[in-house]
Length: 252
Image (tube, rainbow, N blue to C red; front, side, top):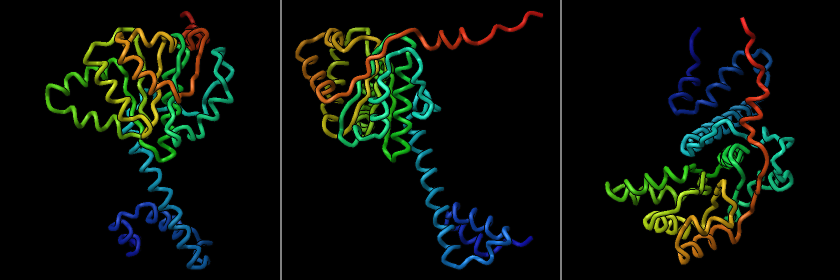
């Protein structure tokens, strides 16, 4: 079967969504009776959807989320971890990111802090916002190396320019002088220009001691906490509960 020249032209122009829709419409007998305007509308709709999907995938790859499959639609509100359902659903709208506000998620190990943060990050990607996930201990190591090999400016720019920065696993180790300075610069440059999610096993009241220098601690926490929403979780480890619910393998 010969390829329709229009299909070749669409592909040459990289209008892949339109090309797929064109091929599908060609194969449908009923579609041949559609008015030209309806054909064009269907082609354009498919191209718009295809480009939107590709942009989302690009943003999701750039975000480097720890839990790529995390989604707000899959949040388990029945789990005993004191998750404020009304607040989380409000956060899922993304209005807080538009308002350049922050989110602090605290709670013991295993209650799903990182997963919830990634679910909100994935939703932000869907909403056409730029996102970047960084585990804080690893980020500090990256920044230290970047200071020495000339990559600091590029790394710093990537941290301060995204719409949503996720800093996972705050504490418990006390920060060094270099880490305090770097964190202060990141927080200062993001203040009023982007939103930040911070997750930690420590309560927010203990963060001051982690920064380990009163002047820096006051400045950093004032910018992070002042306009932040807070999800204070508590309860047993969801990982342990899930592992316990898996039936043991049958003995031979």
